[in-house]
Length: 492
Image 1 (spheres, helix red, strand yellow):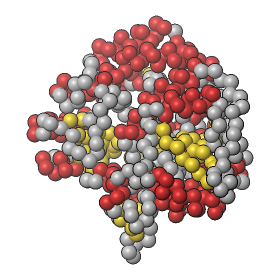
Image 2 (cartoon, rainbow, N blue to C red):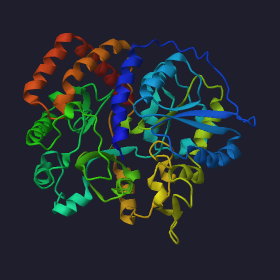
Image 3 (cartoon, rainbow, N blue to C red):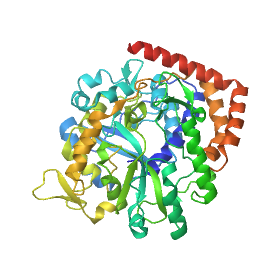
Image 4 (cartoon, helix red, strand yellow):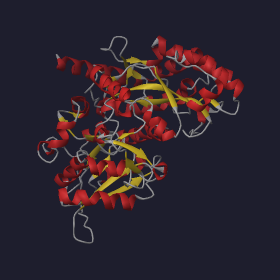
C-alpha cells in the first residue's frame, strides 16, 4: 500500500536528488565514532523515515531482548519526519557524519558516490539468511556497477496502481465501480458524488500527482523520461509524447473543469485521512503483500474497495521502494548487517515492531495459525509500519485476510512480469547539471499539467518547446538512451 505519507516521499526525494547531483562528491568518512550503551554494549544507530511511534522506547526495549541475544549489540532508531528526511540525510551523507544504518535516500546516486558500504561480501556471511529470502528481482534492481549496497524490505517486489474507493460512500449512494478500469471510467461515479455529497472531494489528489501508466521511470518521475512497457520498451521516450498518457491528461482536465478535482490542486499539499469521508476515490499502490484491500481497510478502519488499472511489474522502483543501507562511515558494518539480518528473519522480533506489544495491540486468533486480531490501541501511533521495517512475508496475517486473497497474492507474485529495465541504474554523472536544468524547467509546467488544471493540448507544446530550446533535454535523453542500449546489450 502507498499512503499519502509514502507518496510525499517522492517529491522530497527529488529535492534531495537535485541537491545531491549538485553537491561535492568527496566523501572522506573522517567523522567516525562508536556509540556505547550504559552497560557497555555497542549500539547500532539507525535513521528511519516517518513519524516516531509514541511507544518507541517500549518497542525497542522488547526488540533489543532478541537483537542483543542474537548479535551482542543493541539497536537505537532515530526518526526523521517525512518532510525533513531528504534534506537532513543529504547533509549527513555529504558531511560524512557517522551512523550505521539508514533508510536509503537517492539510493543509486549515493551508492555510486561511495556514501554507502558495499554489502556484497557481508551478504555472504552476516546477511546470508536474509539474502536467501529475497526475490531475485530485489538483487537485480539494487545491483549498482556489479555490487549490492542495499538491504531491501522484502514485500511488494511487484505492485500496481489501484483506484481506492471509500467504501461507506459507495454503499450510501449505491455506486457500482465494478467496471472502472481507467481514469476515463471514473466519470459517472465522480459525477454522482459531486451531486450527492458536495462536501466530499470526488478525486483526491494534490500537487505531486502524476497520472499512472504502464511506464518504467529510469531516473525519477520529476523527469519526463519513461520506458513505455506497452510500446517499444527498448526506447526511452517522453511521457508527454505518448498518446494514451496525453488522453489521461485531457480526461483529468475535463474532471477539473467539472469540479471533480480540487480547484487549488496545483499548489495544494492537502492530504486526505483514510478514515474520513473527505474523499471518494484516490490512487494507492497495492502489491501482493497487502492482500488485496485488506491492509488498506485495516488502516482506514473501514471498507476500501480497490480496482487495479495498471499491470503488475517488477521494476527498479519496486525493488528500491524501501531500502536500508549501511553507511561507509560506520565502524560496525558487520554488526549492522547482523542487525538487519535479524530484523528480516526473526518472526517474533518483526511482528513485535510492526503490530506492537502482544496483548496490548493484538492477540492471536485461536485455532488459526499466524492469524491475529488487532485491538483498539493498535489504531494509535503504537507500532511501526510494515512496508519500511522488515520482511513482510514474516508478518502475521490479520483476521480480515481471506484465503482467496492469500491465493491471489501468490498468483500475482508468480505471474508478475519483469520490466526490461529491471537492473538498469542510470549513471547521472555525465549529465548531472543538465538533469537539474530539466527538472527545473519541467517543474514550471508539470503540476498544472499533471493535475488537469490546464489544457494539456495548449500547455504541453509550450513545455516541449522550452525543453528542446535549452539543450539540456537532448543531452540527458541521448545519454539515457546510450546507457540503456548498453544495458540491454549486456543482457543478451
